[in-house]
Image (tube, rainbow, N blue to C red):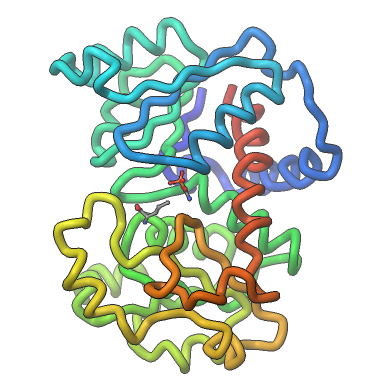
Length: 292
Ligand code: CP
Ligand code: NVA
């Protein structure tokens, strides 16, 4: 039994297998009975469109079932410990997707869970999104190993999953954001990732530019400061013109036009965000088949 708490929860071979299967599932558009009789619980402490809908549709297309729970619906909301919740739910269902404010909630849950636990986004990481991002790059451009990837945004959950992915899939990653959003020098040395404020120079060499909202869920208190600090870090078609000719643009969505992207960025020909969003479904069908 395996959990998917971060990309590193699975081996590179397992991750590559999941991505290969995801591309096949997308091509064949097949519904199946692979998860017939299986039940998935979704417990989300934060809002979601893509993650929730893609897991619900994935279970349906695989012949299984699922239910969605907000903490207020569960005794969790009245203080029942996460450990007890994990033991009880794990004794009834075949898999759990958690979206939590704190990553610790997911690790604590997984330690007591007798069924696979999937991280559907925490403050630390967003590995399901990276499956879709990697799948999209492979689908549109081919092998990602050796590619140059620019992450424009703070050192957030998506950034951490990009850092993990860069090590597993062996691509070159640069993180571009204002210096006061970088981790400490010690952390940067440990991560062995280039952090820079020079967006133009980083993008000039890029095969993939990926960005995210300036204010993640949970960071709302810093909203006005962040919007001011990130003004020079908007991705636009003009900026993409300075990247490599075949470069593509990804965004996990939701996006705020006029902040991290210009109004016209999502509809630019280099933007593959709609393919990327759809790929959440195919990648997670493959993940569920593998884990459950
Ligand atoms: N990208 C992503 O996880 O979207 P949602 O927050 O809508 O699930
Ligand atoms: N970094 C964003 C990702 C949303 C999918 C957030 O955590 O809000």
